[in-house]
Amino acid sequence: MVNARKIFLFIIITFCVCDIVSAASINIDNLQVSNSSGFNAEDGKYKGNTYIDIAASFDGGYKFAAKVGFRMNTNDMATTMPNANASVYNKVFMLLHNVELTAKNLFDSHLFLTVWTGTYKYLGIESDYQGYMFYPDSEEDQYAGAYRLKGSGFSTELRFWEERLRFALHLYENTNFVTNTTQDAFNFFSLDFEFAMYLKYFRMNFFIGGTNDLVLPVENTVLEYGRGKTGFSFWVGDSDYADFKATFALPALDYYYCSEVQNGNITFFDIIYLSADLHFRIFVTDHYISFLTRPRSHNDIDSDYVNDVDVQYRMNVKVGDFPLGGGFIFNFQFAEASPKYTDSRHITAALAPYLTVDYSGIHYQFSVGYDFASIHYAQQSGNDLTAFAGLRFVISAATAF
Image (cartoon, rainbow, N blue to C red; front, top):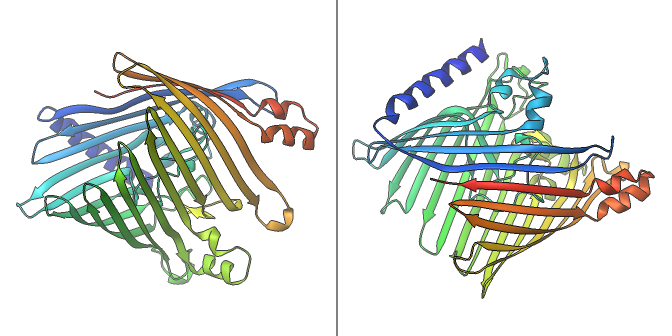
Protein backbone atom coordinates (compact mmCIF):
# COMPACT_ATOMS: atom_id res chain seq x y z
CA MET A 1 0.00 0.00 0.00
CA VAL A 2 2.81 2.39 0.90
CA ASN A 3 4.77 1.56 -2.24
CA ALA A 4 1.63 2.10 -4.33
CA ARG A 5 1.24 5.55 -2.79
CA LYS A 6 4.83 6.39 -3.65
CA ILE A 7 4.46 5.26 -7.26
CA PHE A 8 1.19 7.19 -7.59
CA LEU A 9 2.88 10.37 -6.28
CA PHE A 10 5.73 9.88 -8.74
CA ILE A 11 3.29 9.49 -11.66
CA ILE A 12 1.35 12.63 -10.69
CA ILE A 13 4.51 14.74 -10.40
CA THR A 14 5.88 13.37 -13.67
CA PHE A 15 2.65 14.23 -15.51
CA CYS A 16 2.75 17.73 -14.05
CA VAL A 17 6.29 18.18 -15.29
CA CYS A 18 5.36 16.96 -18.77
CA ASP A 19 2.38 19.32 -18.82
CA ILE A 20 4.50 22.43 -18.25
CA VAL A 21 7.43 21.51 -20.51
CA SER A 22 5.77 23.15 -23.52
CA ALA A 23 5.60 26.48 -21.66
CA ALA A 24 9.13 26.40 -20.28
CA SER A 25 12.68 26.64 -21.53
CA ILE A 26 14.53 23.36 -21.11
CA ASN A 27 18.14 23.12 -19.96
CA ILE A 28 20.37 20.11 -19.48
CA ASP A 29 22.35 21.23 -16.44
CA ASN A 30 24.53 18.14 -16.40
CA LEU A 31 24.98 15.12 -18.64
CA GLN A 32 27.82 12.92 -17.51
CA VAL A 33 28.95 9.40 -18.36
CA SER A 34 31.88 7.90 -16.44
CA ASN A 35 33.55 4.52 -16.22
CA SER A 36 35.69 3.40 -13.30
CA SER A 37 37.55 0.10 -13.64
CA GLY A 38 40.13 -2.01 -11.88
CA PHE A 39 41.09 -5.48 -10.69
CA ASN A 40 39.01 -7.35 -8.14
CA ALA A 41 41.14 -8.81 -5.35
CA GLU A 42 38.78 -11.74 -4.74
CA ASP A 43 38.70 -13.29 -8.21
CA GLY A 44 41.43 -11.39 -10.07
CA LYS A 45 39.00 -10.20 -12.75
CA TYR A 46 39.26 -6.76 -14.32
CA LYS A 47 35.86 -5.13 -13.85
CA GLY A 48 34.31 -1.80 -14.73
CA ASN A 49 31.41 0.23 -13.38
CA THR A 50 29.62 2.82 -15.52
CA TYR A 51 27.97 5.89 -13.97
CA ILE A 52 25.33 8.04 -15.63
CA ASP A 53 24.15 11.38 -14.25
CA ILE A 54 21.51 13.51 -16.00
CA ALA A 55 20.02 16.70 -14.58
CA ALA A 56 17.42 18.72 -16.50
CA SER A 57 15.67 21.94 -15.49
CA PHE A 58 12.61 23.71 -16.85
CA ASP A 59 12.36 27.46 -16.41
CA GLY A 60 8.90 28.99 -16.62
CA GLY A 61 10.05 32.58 -16.10
CA TYR A 62 8.87 34.32 -12.95
CA LYS A 63 6.01 31.86 -12.33
CA PHE A 64 7.40 28.36 -11.96
CA ALA A 65 10.37 26.04 -12.38
CA ALA A 66 10.92 22.28 -12.41
CA LYS A 67 13.80 19.83 -12.18
CA VAL A 68 14.20 16.18 -13.08
CA GLY A 69 17.31 14.13 -12.40
CA PHE A 70 18.40 10.59 -13.20
CA ARG A 71 21.43 8.88 -11.69
CA MET A 72 22.60 5.28 -11.81
CA ASN A 73 25.59 2.96 -11.85
CA THR A 74 25.62 -0.40 -13.56
CA ASN A 75 27.06 -2.46 -10.69
CA ASP A 76 24.42 -1.28 -8.23
CA MET A 77 21.67 -1.91 -10.77
CA ALA A 78 22.98 -5.36 -11.70
CA THR A 79 23.20 -6.58 -8.10
CA THR A 80 20.05 -4.96 -6.69
CA MET A 81 17.48 -5.17 -9.49
CA PRO A 82 17.43 -9.01 -9.71
CA ASN A 83 17.30 -9.29 -5.91
CA ALA A 84 13.73 -10.16 -4.95
CA ASN A 85 14.43 -9.19 -1.33
CA ALA A 86 15.59 -5.67 -2.22
CA SER A 87 13.37 -2.66 -1.55
CA VAL A 88 11.10 -1.80 -4.51
CA TYR A 89 11.18 1.84 -3.47
CA ASN A 90 14.98 1.99 -3.58
CA LYS A 91 14.98 0.18 -6.91
CA VAL A 92 12.90 3.01 -8.40
CA PHE A 93 15.20 5.68 -6.97
CA MET A 94 18.34 3.87 -8.12
CA LEU A 95 17.48 5.37 -11.51
CA LEU A 96 15.22 8.32 -10.75
CA HIS A 97 17.15 10.77 -8.57
CA ASN A 98 14.71 13.65 -8.08
CA VAL A 99 11.59 15.41 -9.36
CA GLU A 100 10.77 18.96 -8.25
CA LEU A 101 8.05 21.52 -9.00
CA THR A 102 8.49 25.08 -7.73
CA ALA A 103 5.99 27.93 -7.69
CA LYS A 104 7.90 31.23 -7.56
CA ASN A 105 7.03 34.34 -5.59
CA LEU A 106 3.49 33.28 -4.69
CA PHE A 107 1.08 36.23 -4.52
CA ASP A 108 4.11 38.58 -4.77
CA SER A 109 4.97 37.63 -1.19
CA HIS A 110 8.60 36.49 -1.67
CA LEU A 111 7.38 32.94 -0.97
CA PHE A 112 8.63 30.00 -3.03
CA LEU A 113 6.87 26.62 -2.70
CA THR A 114 8.47 23.39 -3.92
CA VAL A 115 6.87 19.96 -4.03
CA TRP A 116 9.47 17.22 -4.47
CA THR A 117 10.24 13.53 -4.37
CA GLY A 118 13.55 11.69 -4.40
CA THR A 119 16.71 13.41 -3.20
CA TYR A 120 15.90 17.10 -2.91
CA LYS A 121 19.15 18.55 -1.53
CA TYR A 122 21.77 18.36 1.21
CA LEU A 123 21.55 20.65 4.20
CA GLY A 124 24.33 23.20 4.44
CA ILE A 125 26.80 24.18 1.73
CA GLU A 126 27.77 21.13 -0.29
CA SER A 127 31.35 19.90 -0.17
CA ASP A 128 33.55 19.74 -3.29
CA TYR A 129 35.23 16.59 -2.00
CA GLN A 130 33.37 13.35 -1.32
CA GLY A 131 36.08 10.71 -1.60
CA TYR A 132 39.08 9.45 -3.56
CA MET A 133 38.33 9.26 -7.34
CA PHE A 134 34.74 9.44 -6.15
CA TYR A 135 32.41 7.09 -7.97
CA PRO A 136 30.38 5.37 -5.25
CA ASP A 137 29.20 1.79 -5.47
CA SER A 138 25.87 2.92 -4.04
CA GLU A 139 23.85 6.10 -3.73
CA GLU A 140 24.06 5.60 0.04
CA ASP A 141 27.79 6.41 -0.11
CA GLN A 142 27.15 10.04 -1.05
CA TYR A 143 28.87 12.57 1.24
CA ALA A 144 27.95 15.75 -0.64
CA GLY A 145 26.74 17.47 2.51
CA ALA A 146 25.85 17.17 6.16
CA TYR A 147 22.41 15.62 5.72
CA ARG A 148 20.41 14.36 2.75
CA LEU A 149 16.76 15.32 2.30
CA LYS A 150 15.32 12.20 0.69
CA GLY A 151 11.70 11.16 0.48
CA SER A 152 8.59 13.10 -0.52
CA GLY A 153 7.45 16.43 0.82
CA PHE A 154 7.34 20.15 0.31
CA SER A 155 9.67 23.03 1.05
CA THR A 156 8.81 26.67 1.54
CA GLU A 157 11.35 29.45 1.20
CA LEU A 158 11.10 33.18 1.90
CA ARG A 159 13.61 35.31 -0.02
CA PHE A 160 14.42 38.93 0.84
CA TRP A 161 16.98 41.62 0.01
CA GLU A 162 17.16 40.62 -3.68
CA GLU A 163 17.22 36.96 -2.59
CA ARG A 164 20.35 37.40 -0.47
CA LEU A 165 18.51 36.40 2.72
CA ARG A 166 16.57 33.14 2.72
CA PHE A 167 14.46 31.30 5.30
CA ALA A 168 13.43 27.75 4.40
CA LEU A 169 11.20 25.14 6.01
CA HIS A 170 11.18 21.50 4.87
CA LEU A 171 8.44 19.07 5.87
CA TYR A 172 8.79 15.59 4.38
CA GLU A 173 8.42 11.87 4.73
CA ASN A 174 11.99 10.77 5.39
CA THR A 175 12.95 7.65 3.41
CA ASN A 176 16.61 7.60 4.44
CA PHE A 177 15.47 4.81 6.77
CA VAL A 178 14.12 2.62 3.93
CA THR A 179 16.66 -0.14 3.24
CA ASN A 180 16.58 -3.74 2.06
CA THR A 181 16.23 -4.86 5.69
CA THR A 182 13.67 -2.16 6.65
CA GLN A 183 11.53 -1.98 3.52
CA ASP A 184 8.40 -0.74 5.30
CA ALA A 185 10.07 2.15 7.18
CA PHE A 186 7.82 4.81 5.66
CA ASN A 187 6.63 6.13 9.02
CA PHE A 188 9.56 8.53 9.59
CA PHE A 189 8.85 12.24 9.16
CA SER A 190 11.17 15.23 9.41
CA LEU A 191 10.87 18.97 9.88
CA ASP A 192 13.97 21.06 9.12
CA PHE A 193 14.63 24.81 9.19
CA GLU A 194 17.34 26.69 7.29
CA PHE A 195 18.62 30.26 7.38
CA ALA A 196 21.01 31.30 4.61
CA MET A 197 22.80 34.45 3.50
CA TYR A 198 24.27 34.88 0.01
CA LEU A 199 26.69 37.78 -0.50
CA LYS A 200 29.31 38.34 -3.19
CA TYR A 201 32.29 37.23 -1.11
CA PHE A 202 30.56 35.49 1.79
CA ARG A 203 27.84 32.88 2.20
CA MET A 204 26.54 31.13 5.28
CA ASN A 205 23.93 28.53 6.15
CA PHE A 206 22.53 27.42 9.49
CA PHE A 207 20.11 24.52 9.88
CA ILE A 208 18.31 22.71 12.64
CA GLY A 209 15.70 19.98 12.49
CA GLY A 210 14.32 16.75 13.81
CA THR A 211 12.97 13.34 12.81
CA ASN A 212 10.56 10.99 14.50
CA ASP A 213 8.81 7.76 13.61
CA LEU A 214 5.06 7.92 13.98
CA VAL A 215 3.72 4.66 15.38
CA LEU A 216 1.09 3.58 17.88
CA PRO A 217 1.49 2.62 20.60
CA VAL A 218 4.40 5.00 21.14
CA GLU A 219 6.33 2.29 23.01
CA ASN A 220 7.05 0.70 19.64
CA THR A 221 9.00 3.70 18.37
CA VAL A 222 12.48 3.09 16.94
CA LEU A 223 13.85 6.56 17.70
CA GLU A 224 13.37 7.02 21.43
CA TYR A 225 12.74 10.76 22.01
CA GLY A 226 13.29 11.36 18.27
CA ARG A 227 16.49 12.34 16.44
CA GLY A 228 17.74 15.88 15.96
CA LYS A 229 20.22 17.52 13.62
CA THR A 230 21.98 20.88 13.49
CA GLY A 231 24.86 22.44 11.63
CA PHE A 232 26.56 25.54 10.30
CA SER A 233 28.47 26.11 7.06
CA PHE A 234 30.08 29.09 5.36
CA TRP A 235 31.97 30.10 2.23
CA VAL A 236 34.31 33.07 1.91
CA GLY A 237 36.53 34.35 -0.89
CA ASP A 238 36.65 34.77 -4.64
CA SER A 239 36.14 31.61 -6.70
CA ASP A 240 38.62 32.77 -9.35
CA TYR A 241 41.62 33.23 -7.05
CA ALA A 242 41.06 31.94 -3.52
CA ASP A 243 38.16 30.71 -1.44
CA PHE A 244 37.44 28.55 1.60
CA LYS A 245 34.32 26.76 2.78
CA ALA A 246 33.57 24.54 5.73
CA THR A 247 30.67 22.71 7.37
CA PHE A 248 30.31 21.55 10.95
CA ALA A 249 27.26 19.44 11.77
CA LEU A 250 25.75 16.97 14.20
CA PRO A 251 23.55 14.93 11.84
CA ALA A 252 22.32 12.30 14.34
CA LEU A 253 21.54 13.66 17.78
CA ASP A 254 19.49 11.07 19.63
CA TYR A 255 19.39 9.09 22.86
CA TYR A 256 21.31 6.13 21.43
CA TYR A 257 24.33 8.03 20.08
CA CYS A 258 24.54 10.35 23.08
CA SER A 259 24.58 7.25 25.29
CA GLU A 260 27.30 5.68 23.15
CA VAL A 261 29.48 8.77 23.65
CA GLN A 262 28.72 8.93 27.37
CA ASN A 263 29.58 5.24 27.83
CA GLY A 264 32.86 5.61 25.93
CA ASN A 265 31.94 3.25 23.09
CA ILE A 266 32.53 6.04 20.59
CA THR A 267 33.94 9.56 20.89
CA PHE A 268 32.32 12.92 20.16
CA PHE A 269 34.44 12.99 17.00
CA ASP A 270 32.43 10.02 15.70
CA ILE A 271 29.09 11.86 15.71
CA ILE A 272 30.21 15.01 13.87
CA TYR A 273 30.32 15.74 10.17
CA LEU A 274 33.17 18.11 9.34
CA SER A 275 34.22 19.13 5.85
CA ALA A 276 36.57 21.85 4.65
CA ASP A 277 37.71 22.87 1.16
CA LEU A 278 40.48 25.39 0.49
CA HIS A 279 41.17 26.58 -3.06
CA PHE A 280 43.79 29.03 -4.29
CA ARG A 281 45.22 29.89 -7.70
CA ILE A 282 48.90 30.50 -8.52
CA PHE A 283 49.51 31.58 -12.12
CA VAL A 284 48.00 28.78 -14.27
CA THR A 285 47.67 26.27 -11.43
CA ASP A 286 44.73 25.71 -9.10
CA HIS A 287 45.30 24.02 -5.75
CA TYR A 288 42.62 22.28 -3.70
CA ILE A 289 43.06 20.99 -0.14
CA SER A 290 40.13 19.06 1.32
CA PHE A 291 39.33 17.54 4.69
CA LEU A 292 36.37 15.30 5.56
CA THR A 293 35.21 13.29 8.56
CA ARG A 294 32.51 10.67 8.18
CA PRO A 295 30.26 10.34 11.25
CA ARG A 296 29.12 6.99 12.58
CA SER A 297 25.63 7.79 11.31
CA HIS A 298 25.31 9.72 8.05
CA ASN A 299 21.97 10.15 6.27
CA ASP A 300 20.55 7.95 9.06
CA ILE A 301 22.66 4.99 7.90
CA ASP A 302 25.08 3.46 10.40
CA SER A 303 28.73 2.99 9.46
CA ASP A 304 31.04 0.19 10.53
CA TYR A 305 33.93 2.58 11.15
CA VAL A 306 35.04 5.15 13.72
CA ASN A 307 37.74 7.84 13.59
CA ASP A 308 37.07 8.16 9.87
CA VAL A 309 39.21 10.95 8.30
CA ASP A 310 40.07 11.93 4.72
CA VAL A 311 42.68 14.46 3.55
CA GLN A 312 43.19 15.23 -0.13
CA TYR A 313 45.38 17.56 -2.19
CA ARG A 314 44.61 18.20 -5.87
CA MET A 315 46.63 20.32 -8.28
CA ASN A 316 45.16 21.33 -11.64
CA VAL A 317 46.87 23.09 -14.56
CA LYS A 318 44.74 25.00 -17.11
CA VAL A 319 45.94 27.74 -19.46
CA GLY A 320 43.11 29.99 -20.63
CA ASP A 321 41.09 28.48 -23.47
CA PHE A 322 43.74 25.90 -24.34
CA PRO A 323 41.84 22.61 -24.63
CA LEU A 324 44.34 20.46 -22.70
CA GLY A 325 44.75 20.47 -18.94
CA GLY A 326 45.57 18.10 -16.15
CA GLY A 327 47.12 17.56 -12.77
CA PHE A 328 47.29 15.02 -10.00
CA ILE A 329 45.53 13.96 -6.79
CA PHE A 330 47.06 12.74 -3.56
CA ASN A 331 44.60 11.18 -1.14
CA PHE A 332 44.97 9.82 2.38
CA GLN A 333 42.22 8.08 4.35
CA PHE A 334 42.18 6.47 7.77
CA ALA A 335 39.43 4.66 9.64
CA GLU A 336 39.11 2.07 12.39
CA ALA A 337 36.62 -0.77 12.43
CA SER A 338 34.05 -0.71 15.22
CA PRO A 339 34.12 -2.07 17.86
CA LYS A 340 37.70 -0.91 18.39
CA TYR A 341 38.88 -4.14 20.00
CA THR A 342 38.89 -5.81 16.57
CA ASP A 343 42.08 -3.78 15.94
CA SER A 344 41.19 -3.48 12.26
CA ARG A 345 42.33 -0.45 10.25
CA HIS A 346 41.46 0.89 6.84
CA ILE A 347 44.11 3.08 5.20
CA THR A 348 44.31 4.63 1.74
CA ALA A 349 47.41 6.39 0.42
CA ALA A 350 46.77 7.03 -3.26
CA LEU A 351 48.25 9.05 -6.11
CA ALA A 352 46.25 9.72 -9.27
CA PRO A 353 47.50 11.83 -12.22
CA TYR A 354 44.85 12.91 -14.73
CA LEU A 355 44.44 14.59 -18.12
CA THR A 356 41.51 16.78 -19.22
CA VAL A 357 40.39 17.70 -22.73
CA ASP A 358 37.74 20.30 -23.62
CA TYR A 359 36.46 19.83 -27.15
CA SER A 360 33.18 20.74 -28.87
CA GLY A 361 31.45 21.60 -25.61
CA ILE A 362 32.36 18.31 -23.92
CA HIS A 363 34.75 17.96 -20.97
CA TYR A 364 36.74 14.72 -21.03
CA GLN A 365 38.85 13.40 -18.18
CA PHE A 366 41.25 10.46 -18.14
CA SER A 367 42.86 9.40 -14.89
CA VAL A 368 44.79 6.49 -13.45
CA GLY A 369 45.31 6.05 -9.72
CA TYR A 370 47.10 3.65 -7.45
CA ASP A 371 46.53 3.07 -3.75
CA PHE A 372 49.96 2.24 -2.31
CA ALA A 373 48.36 0.92 0.88
CA SER A 374 47.20 -2.10 -1.14
CA ILE A 375 50.82 -3.32 -1.19
CA HIS A 376 50.72 -3.52 2.60
CA TYR A 377 47.38 -5.34 2.53
CA ALA A 378 48.74 -7.81 -0.05
CA GLN A 379 51.68 -8.64 2.21
CA GLN A 380 49.40 -8.89 5.22
CA SER A 381 46.91 -11.23 3.53
CA GLY A 382 49.40 -13.20 1.45
CA ASN A 383 47.25 -12.53 -1.63
CA ASP A 384 49.24 -10.82 -4.40
CA LEU A 385 46.04 -9.94 -6.24
CA THR A 386 45.28 -7.41 -3.50
CA ALA A 387 48.19 -5.29 -4.75
CA PHE A 388 46.59 -5.07 -8.21
CA ALA A 389 43.27 -4.03 -6.63
CA GLY A 390 44.84 -0.65 -5.79
CA LEU A 391 44.97 0.25 -9.50
CA ARG A 392 42.03 2.22 -10.92
CA PHE A 393 41.28 3.79 -14.30
CA VAL A 394 38.59 6.43 -14.85
CA ILE A 395 37.27 7.83 -18.14
CA SER A 396 34.61 10.54 -17.96
CA ALA A 397 32.74 12.81 -20.36
CA ALA A 398 30.43 15.64 -19.28
CA THR A 399 28.50 18.47 -20.92
CA ALA A 400 25.69 20.94 -20.33
CA PHE A 401 23.38 22.72 -22.79
